[in-house]
Amino acid sequence: MSDNHVDLDGLFVRFLDKGTETPLYFAEKLAKIGTDEVKERLLEIVGGEDMENAYLAVKALSLMENREDVLDSVFAAIHRPANRDKNGGLVSLLEDFDLSEHFVDVFRVFLFGNFKASTLAGSYLDYMEFDITPRTLKKAEKHWNHFLNNASSDEAFELKRTEGEEILREIKALLDD
Image (cartoon, rainbow, N blue to C red; front, side):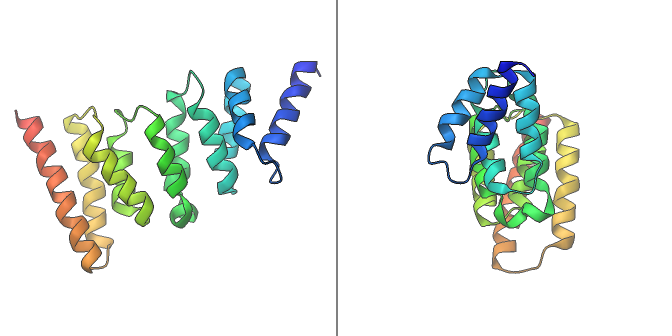
């Protein structure tokens, strides 16, 4: 093993040590190294079971220069059913990324996320710019129909239904122009 690899292993150990008081210091160090190996190891952590570690790994990834290709893995962790009630922290970190190609993922979080995740996704839908195509709309409508057919009808459902209908109506109007 090279000295550099040993240092990388040591950084990851300190980064993930629950007793460390400055995990973001190590996140910044890992992000500065920024190699494909660092990125892959961080993505493995994102895909793991420990949401605290996943949060730290996404934070480190968000600090990297070359980071846009990690969003599919981040959204996979957010959408994992086992993480539904504890993924708000990951959703909060999405603001550090270019989400323009991820309208459908953000819309899914809005529809199916817990209160924090859904609220954050709603604000991203309101304030971020997305690249929308007819295909994007079709995918969003698929998730919309799943939401309508599987959600319980209560006050929260009605509010989300109203907001969701408005979002889809605005997209259709943009695409018709």
